[in-house]
Image 1 (cartoon, rainbow, N blue to C red):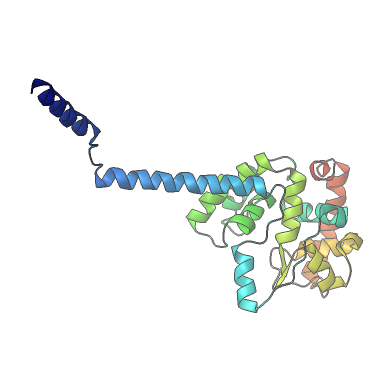
Image 2: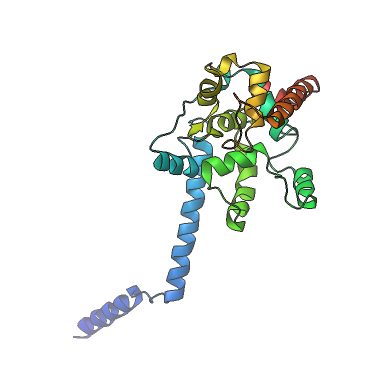
Length: 246
């Protein structure tokens, strides 16, 4: 009888030990929030590394335009299929210090703030992040995410890859995305055959692609394109194009 009592008592102790205390609602919510955060970070990391080798299918803005218009014109072109002067032209027009910064051009941001926001301070790397991973708009949330993701893209991708993606996701007219579609749309040519003037005109319309034309340029676009031609030649001569041409 004594033995049976001992076994029964031991069984009760074991059952009691196996019973886990219930987590509070706050603790469970916190746990799921952290799981969500880690899941998002893991997804971002996968996309960062994946798009280093895989061509991005298009961002949220491109998808929204395709839905709105019914279709868009876009064909991927590798850097080997794009005239080198095209890459130099967009750098000269949009981000002359592209090879010198790590994604965020502090001087350009400061100049833009001093100018009252009349001009943008975004680098080409920031524009790639916006077009590939985020959405268009001026909200603080998007700007904050852009500021966080841009250095990560710079750390994982090469400068040459950043330029390649930029040239393939940039909007050149309504429903026209990427330099391949733009070259044919405006000049009925291939991106590899773009001249210095044609490349400069394409770069000149990038800040306002729906309001400017590369094939029928206004006097402003002509003047800006002429300046870009000189700028592209300058960054080639002084070595500021080496990071994406080597």
